[in-house]
Length: 345
Image 1: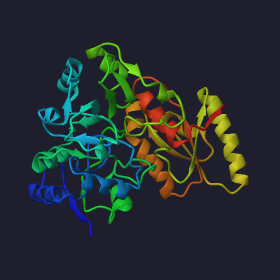
Image 2: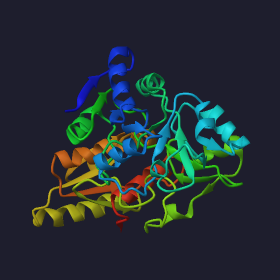
Image 3: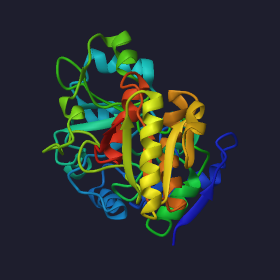
Image 4: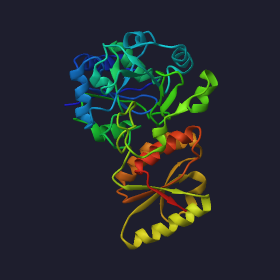
């Protein structure tokens, strides 16, 4: 049976935190909120505990896990060859939604690192996550708290419905403020490389450490042979509905989608469009408004995909977003959700 703790991040119940920390110390699994998405955690240094994460998610065991910490000093326990750029990133952006990849020490099991000689580390800023990590005093491996391949949960109710009785503990906190998983930055080479875009953008990083590369694999739909970061392999973020991205000028996109909606209706298919607030009246079908800004789109994307399932839509069409800044992260998740299916308007 899963122990459920409802915790207000503005008034943290320390007794509930202690109960959930004890579950983690026992080598079991606990789901907790972060500022990005909800995470499914276990002791990162215990191979058997980490195996329980993979089992709960139905996750391929060669996908690396992100290790969550509460104190920068813990990096020295987990990693070696910590360079100046890593120090700058930690000082500038931690705690916050960025994961850094460094060469791992032997203390980190291969199961945690997905069989790689590197380790992915981040320090979350969510108050509940911070309280839990400080109480447990262990590095906690935690991928997103969903069935592998499904949209990542950003609301406690979604975690409860999908993962109750699959894990040992669930902390239900508030909604996640960023809504997309952390930026993943590989710092093991001379030029840092973004392996997964997120809320901390390429531009943000280049302002403090100079030139940053984008992993070429981000432009391809083929699976990586050996994923160096979560979300790089396999189809991801997919609801039961079939997702398509419609690309082109705004009015052309609306006309194309309305044409497709008419065809779907004749075939008895239930359709919804994910769009910006300004465009919601352009469509002749149900809409899910993602927000007015790209920041709101990022925050609402995963919960909107889950909502499409709850309402049993057959087909989801999404508007395309600019592939720069945080739009780069939005499009990365949308493309994977759609299996790279793009319709040109």
